[in-house]
Length: 414
Image 1 (cartoon, rainbow, N blue to C red):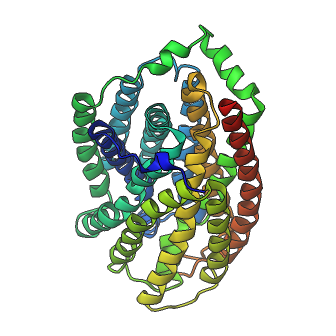
Image 2: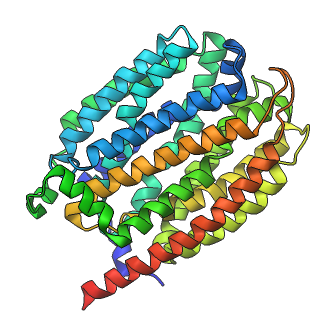
């Protein structure tokens, strides 16, 4: 069913907000995503086992999750612009520390710092979006803002991998830190204060506010749906480049092109999925994309040595499923909390999302095996089956979220 309200064009300031949040998301996603394509490079540079690399990826997620929980009680007590600037500045510092790390343990510490600040940025952005855009526009907005995911693959990851191949693995982190500093300046100058939620507060203490957010049944279902969607979507990602290089025999020089093609596809797919989510039904789009992803995952994880063009095709069609889940799920869960609880809800949701991703990375590191740094990755197909099982559960949970949101919207009409 279509809704005429989604045909109303955005104002010039709304377009500016979308752009600022999109490039902010681009920088954070790039910092997080670059670890996976550099996985083979980092494992060989530090002579790491899969479990150690899994820890390097998951430590970011766990620290981000902890940060989200600690800030949830305060998230609705401040101007969202100031909150965004504070955490984005900390993210820049953490990313710079990554660029000067000279040991595995120093890199782990730097990833903890980056996660503590970077892991909260997405939730603040989501709260800003929810404050400024109604539910009928959020699919489109999410589609554009989350294009940062695709843009990071089109521009950031290929260029980052090129720098890493030409200079060293530290170079991409230095690039992200420099770019983020410029984005922070744009946020400071261009973004207006976001304070409407402050007038809806009921003077609850931060701890009481946090407890209240957890106590709402509809909120808890939203949290679970977010967590399981994250586990299902993240389980295979940390070892994607290791599988591509050592099993499919894609060379390090071909990796930038592989990620660029997938990213270009993402830039096309995300806006389409956003419009479909607004025009049809967010849950239906999510469910169909989940089934599509499950089928592709089974086939892809059983591939052996393959030509680059075939691997590109599989990455693109798998991306259709992953992004087809991400956009409608994000848009739908933003409709769950009331305005006065949005900051806390988004912080907790982001926290659980990050922790879930960390659990997925850590578990993946324990499931897959590699005899030595040049051997094929073993048991990657097992990750595929685990991903499918968790994805089925996430579909059930998001269905419950969809029913709750529809009931809430009907009650508002009455």
